[in-house]
Length: 151
Image 1 (cartoon, one colour):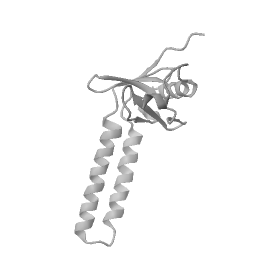
Image 2 (cartoon, rainbow, N blue to C red):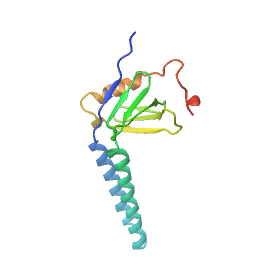
Image 3 (cartoon, rainbow, N blue to C red):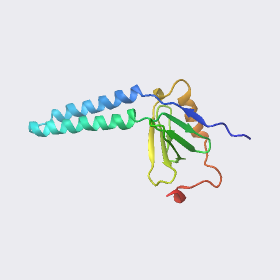
């Protein structure tokens, strides 16, 4: 039986992720600002929360790759915004759910893993469903690399 062709997806910024990040950080900043602490401590804590919000937005929303290519053999190719393609293996730590999917993958030749948070509004139309189906039915190739061999 012939395997299906790899699935190539073009992610877009998730409005849900942006709203969730902004609302949780705003609530945290309000909570910290209302604590019974000296004003200097509260001001520094609010600045730290705002910086954490900016870092999270950059890491999860603005640094989304240009495209993602997922194969039934659990191989992934991530094209970064700069045009660089990084290939790797999707690990069993990935989670596939109806509303949230996390792709945990290890680039070839590295020990460090990476993760991609994927929400339903990050892809057009049926692409989120296709990704979930591909991940649910994917298997590592026979004789493929195991986690012990890779790192």
